[in-house]
Image (cartoon, rainbow, N blue to C red):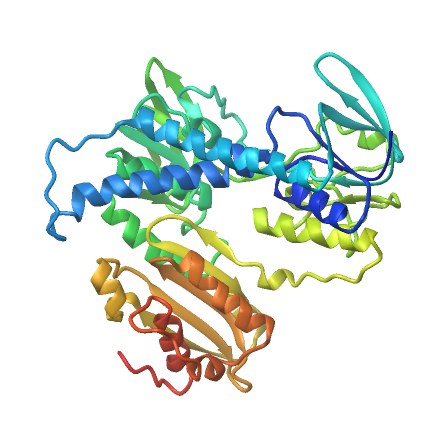
Length: 466
């Protein structure tokens, strides 16, 4: 069989690339080694974690805020099995949806392990048979897998990754989270809401360290209210299991003092690494960088003409929506179009509660660049809508050019900011000024008014409600 494009990997980058290629009239094949489509994001990442986050948030509110709203409950308890069953149903529905989209767009799906024999020949090794297909172009979209630390033995029972954290047999009494990034804070939140004590060990001096420093400080305050404890600036030396107890030893990077933490589960969430195992890259003369990523040019093409790579397997943020944009970009490039991606304007989100969302430059980046900027902030405690919903933690922070007033970065922590950040992305795509946002009517009462107020604060300190 011969194809115009073959996509290896069916995660957000891969399946979106396949659909867009098909839409553009290219005969397209999609190869996936697992029995379900959707990759990490749909099966063991974005989708199931959000399902668990929503379920745990419902329980937490029932336990802690319903009485204030005048809703009285008795005999409240967690049915973790049902929570996980519901999560599995959401995953199943979503993955089935991708299968439907493949049929709708006439993409040929192969189940098996895809690898290069040469640049135009792909071997597909299935459970019972092996076949070869020929292709004019190939898109590598094999994603990433959880990373670990030297000396850490992940047994997937007591020392676990985010994959196992989605299917625990019980709510931990105490969970240690190694890594204060997005995944650790989200999965830690799930179990903290359900009653677990959560201890976070992070090497850097703040949580979510890649985001604007204000966001990390504010999120830490909110999570401490939930019962989190933090060991920041600590280097993990070991994690060992004895019976049902995990012992983590870490060193304080400032004082060199050792701390020993015991718990019944330890979640290792120190990031992810590109996954290229068994692709046969050597057969077409491709090598990876020091982090295992496939090297690509500005068109996401490798050094081998006609072979492209997208998503977690290449440079840049490991985000599902970044992979989707790249999948579309490559499909349109192959079809002869001239697409573009502004990587600065790909938003980042942390789905804790309060949520964290950001786009553009951080304040730390602007300082490093020596760029003259101004800051406008507005706290959610001053928002009528936030008071009505009892979601007053957080702040909206707008960074604008001191001279031109162009918005350079927007950083939000608060209720529903994962959705609110889209307005900031649109504004920055059209190079709006803070003043532009202040002149647009925002419905009252809404959370989005806080973005307008932060822009007012950045524009000659004109915020109305603070």
